Length: 171
Image 1: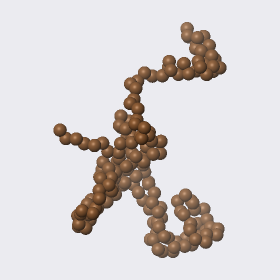
Image 2: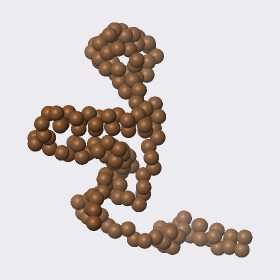
Image 3: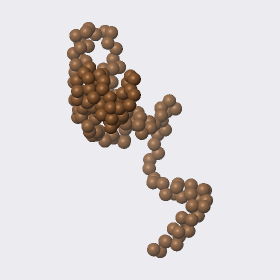
Image 4: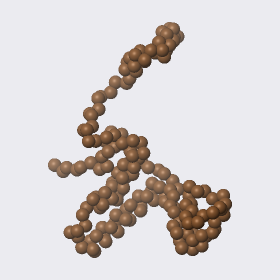
C-alpha cells in the first residue's frame, strides 16, 4: 500500500497525457531480444493467413504435399506419377482425418432426390436453381464436407510463420 498514492497519481497523469502514456509503455515493456527485421519483400502473416500457413506446414510435414505440387511432372511416366499421387493422397487423407475428422454434411447419395426442411441451416446447405421458399426437394449435387473436430498441433512460435518447411542441409 505504500505505493498506492504514487500509482494513483501515475494512473491519472497517464490517462490525461499521451506523452506520459507512451513513456510509461516504453518503461513497462518487457525487455526482450530485438527481433531481426524482415526483408522488405516479406511480410508477417495476419492471424487467418498464419493458420492457413500452419495447415500447409502440417500437410508438408506429414504428406509432402507442397513437394508434390511444386514438382514438375513432365519428366515422369504416368505409372510413377500415379504411385506418388496415391502416396500423397493417402497421407493427406490421413492427416485431415487426424486433425479434423472430415465428415459429409449430408449422408444421402449424390445425384439422388432429397428433401430439405424449412428450418435447415443455410451455412451447411447451399440451395441453387429456382429456390423459392423452403422446404425444398431437389437433387443432391454434392454432399458437402465439414470438420467434426479441430485439433491442430501448436505452432512453434520460435519459427518464422512464413516458412512452411525449412530448407535442410546435411553436413
